[in-house]
Length: 292
Image (cartoon, rainbow, N blue to C red; front, side, top):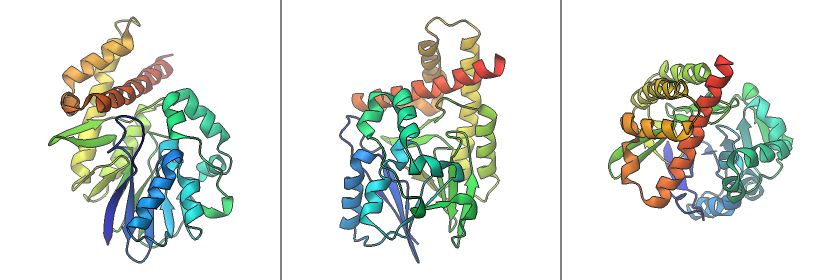
C-alpha cells in the first residue's frame, strides 16, 4: 500500500508544515482528514497534481474545522467520494452552524482564518458504526474531541490528535498535548490505552508527522499527560493570579518533550504557544469541573 502526505499550505504565518492529509492507495483511494475550508482548493490542486483522479473514501478523525472544513470543496471535485465519520458528527456535518459558532468562540481569529465549513449532503456520509470497509478498523478515541475516531488500515494507525501533536524541529522531537476545553482527563487516557493495547505499528498524526512505533509515541504522550496533570494542579493550588502564565512557564521548564520550542522560528513559536495555552485551559477546566 502506498501512503503519502499531502501538505495543505496556509496563508497564516507559522501555519505551514502544520496541516496534512494522508493519502492511502491500494484497492481504494482513501484520504484521511482534509484541513480547513479556506484552503480546500489547495488540497484538491495537490491531489490532482499527484494524479489522484478518484477518491473513494474520506476518513475524518474528528470534526474540528481544521480537519473537516475542507470537506465541501473536496467532495465537489470528487463526486464519487463517501465520508466516514462519527455517528454523532453527522448532524454537524449536514448543518455546521453550531460547529462554526463554537469554533469562533474557542479559536476566534484563527477560526476566521480557517473559514466556515460548508454543509455536506447526508447521503455522502457514512456513520462509523455501520461502516464495513474491508481492512479498516475504527476505534472510538474520545479525548481531544468527544467524537474523535482513530483508524487502523492495513496495520497503519491514523491517530488524529488522540496522542497529541508531534513534530520534528531540527532533529528534535516535539510533542504537545491536544487537550482543549472541554477536556476529560480519564477519557483521554483511556483512549490512549485503547490504542496501546493494539499491536505496535506505524502511526500517522493529525498534524503532519509520522513515526514507526505507535507504542513509543503513545507511551510518551501518556507520560506527558500525567506530568501536565501534576504540574498544572500544583499551580492551581497556589491561586488564580496569572495562573495560565505560571502553568506554561513551569511546563516549558519541566517537560522535556517541549524542548523543540527553543528551536522554532518566531511565527511557529507563536502558533505553538497559542495551542499550548488552549491545552492548558483544557486541564484547568477539567480540574474546575472535577473539584467543583
